[in-house]
Length: 151
Image 1: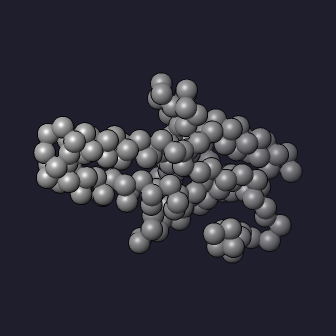
Image 2: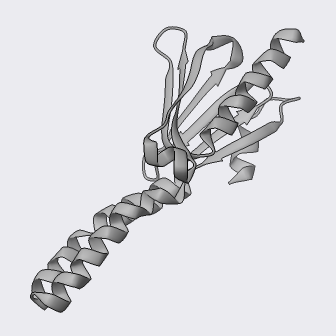
């Protein structure tokens, strides 16, 4: 994957940081599986099997989000990648970034994840949910913006 990212970079551009999805994306799927096993054990095995079958889609979505979502900070821009079958690459140069902030739920503060939102001039917008250590990513982005303005 790093080779694919490096092919998108221009010359004299280096990767500063990579934001990845937090493990919390698997929590709803784990709860569905737990409910399925409890239903199978205490109510009816067929009902538990149906619930377990229906939980396969959220499990699939969680794995795709966890393995295929990246938020990449370079010394010149921010890149985001989402999706598996249809990929969405978004890039935003530092001079086009208007605002960068976190949307952090209460449980996200304790577990260490947040939604990173980077809004650009005009209609540009990057919002990636459940980024692990989102505050560190925003801090590194702000430092790189200051360095790019000074240069």
